Image 1 (cartoon, rainbow, N blue to C red):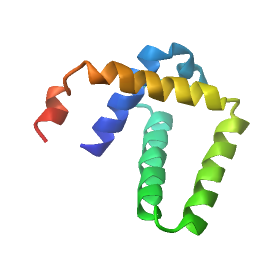
Image 2: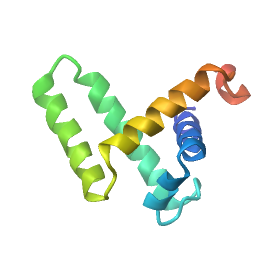
Image 3: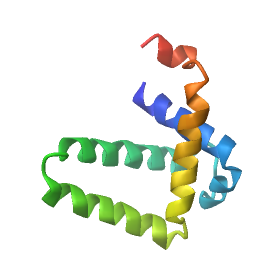
Length: 102
């Protein structure tokens, strides 16, 4: 279920900000590249949640994440717009059936 949730989030981000697709050589959500990205997103979120009380571990992980995105040319503003836009659009929509039943 978690993998589906993160695919859903990315799908919505791509709908809101189609230029975000350009950061993937293969934007097919079933591709190995995209599945590896989803796995990394889930892993990073897990590390962040586990270390909320330990900034000495959390901050380097988030800095590394920022460096990776900056190296790819992704700007902080793009992330903020995509995430904020996703959140606003989702407030007016019901959860997909696959998530609502979990």
